[in-house]
Amino acid sequence: MLSSSSLTFLKRLLDTPGPSGYEAAAARVWRAEAQTFADAVRGDVAGNSLAEVNPGGSPTILLDGHIDEIGLIAQYIDDDGYVYISPIGGWDPEVLVGQRLRFLTGDGGVVGVLGKKPIHLIKTSDRDKASRITDFWVDIGAANRAEAEARVSVGDAAVIDSHSVDLPNDRLVSRSIDDRIGAFTVLEALRRYRERPGKARVVAAATTQEEIAWNGGGALISANAVRPHMAIAVDVTFATDHPGLEKKEIGDHKLGSGPVLVRGALISPVVFELLRDAARAAKIPFTVHAEGRATHTNADAIHMAREGVATALVSIPNRYMHSPNEMVSLADVDHTAALIAEACRGVDDRTDFTAR
Image (cartoon, rainbow, N blue to C red; front, side):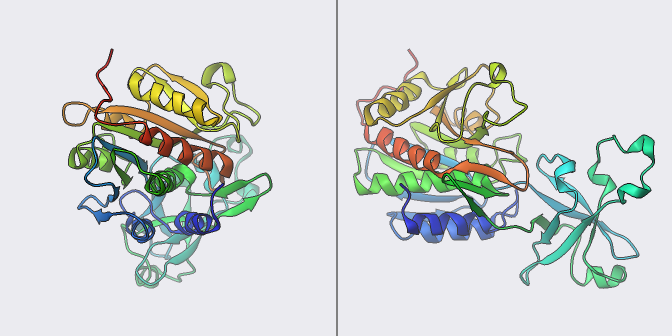
């Protein structure tokens, strides 16, 4: 299971704000932890953070988890001091109603309340219509524009003002599970690989801008810089053990059922089999998800880097994705880190990643 020190780090990482394009604070937390055990730690101009173990080893394996979360950005401040916002990443506007937000200013942040017209004043014919972000404003307690602009500037990012919460059955709730949990997991896998290293050089990367980047974002930059022969991207996927989901469409991936190994069009069959065989040998529970097209994760960018990278995708089941209260099983996180470390130990210069 995850150690108490790893859990403390995980919660600190989850609670540190880091929406796409504004990941610096969360990246500093990740790099500080990496420096406690990695052989080398560095950042780059895109905001990515990289930690390396066994730098003289071969071949090179890249472990990717994106550290950004969805957020909001101040778009306009009106004469009465209300702040209007635009999304950073994909939001269901309904989950924002009634939330407190924290704008990421340089002095610890500015808290505001997301405002919406009260239900009593909404016309009956409009009550069943979905809300839009343009229907909302943020009230930071300012009396006028000048007072508001002294505290918040256009372009300031914001996140839901919340902290991680433990629930029974090893469940953890946070606004930033997607995909701060992936950034944590690749570093935890690197830590475990360091304890019993194999032949490979392994680089864990906490990459930026996945939630907004249709061009590969920080993951593509990292893959080009690290020049891996093999890569494993870690992200979240939809847990299917709550009401309203159709397992015939997206598979059966319960909280506590272990990592989800993705199999399909963009996934290296060599790396998929390596992960599957490692899971079976170590008796790590897992499920398989079929993906016939793009995965809509960093795996899509990484596998196209340079002359091609043998890439796999390992997902962690996540309830209530892109909401203020995403939920995962810590047992799944532990099993995912253990599986990746074990798979990395099974790679050496004799491993042939050529598609066959």
